[in-house]
Image (cartoon, rainbow, N blue to C red; front, side, top):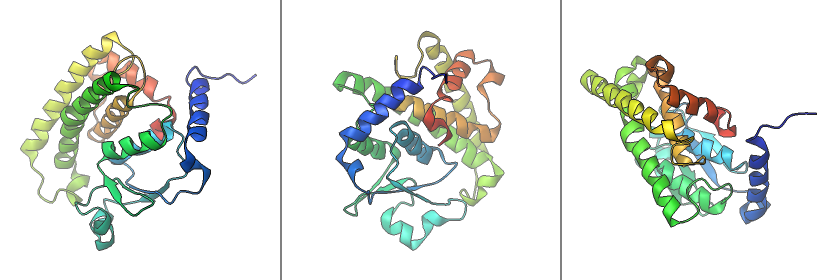
Length: 235
């Protein structure tokens, strides 16, 4: 008999519920996600979609290294040259990864990743914003201004900003490691969007050869290894 992981069984039930709950799934969707492999914010959305088993949104690659995000055609959809961008069936376009996830949560409500009631939503958003503004942002600045391959995106990198951002990233990681000593997930006792944001942050930091195990952050390593088992981790 094939064994089923403790995550897989309830996740499949939730996926089935999502398919049954959303009328959008009953027909081919004209919704398009413009995404960029390797970039953290697009991965936040594709990870989110994978957890909800959303398969009928067309994913169109926007190659940042080749400048696809700055073409006239793409700028008509995303005037600030941002990726990801979600083009809805009426032609409107959503940018900002969290706004996109909010839309997806409404259309595909199961499994819930952003909070079941006002109280839970507030605490999940608090943690997601902490991760985004204090950890992901610092990591992005470290990578963009410190990695030579990113010169195509940062024509005039600022080494001092890279060094300062590295210290902020490492400091927050140590703080988060201490926080995780008392719970399984970032925002409480279940997996949420905050875990997704934190996971893609760690993944992006690998470009700078950062790993929490080398820092002795045992709780962060334990948490990361658990999230790696989830369907969206390879998105």
